[in-house]
Image (cartoon, rainbow, N blue to C red; front, top):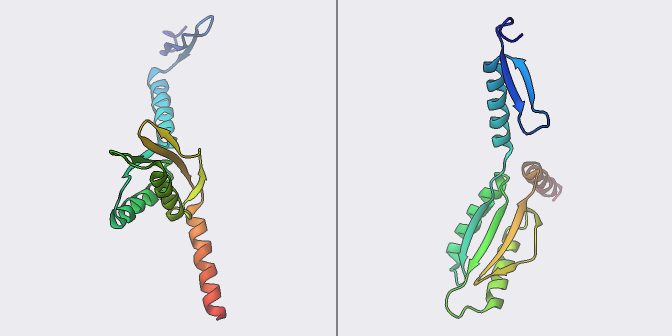
Length: 150
């Protein structure tokens, strides 16, 4: 039948019982598969990770927090990891993670879990705000309104 219509017999799902095959044009089928694959890749969100030392200078901390805000603005979840060296105090690591979370307050929608220790490192995953641009514009409008009312 496929030869008479100048089409191809394509096995669509070989795992099914019985396997499913369709009579269709191979080039169109291949194009549709590539299109679906490309679409699924574009929807995928990669998780980023930022490492901090337990004893970090304020300038370095601000720079790394700025990079994290850029990741969050691009809608990437971010894993924040604090590395311990030597006899680093765990309470110092926890205060640093809390300090970072305070800095990122306007960019984070949720903290996935409590900070947890993975060996010598303290890690936490944060998710970005879905409508960050709308929130920024609303905040700007509120500040303009309060300034004009003064």
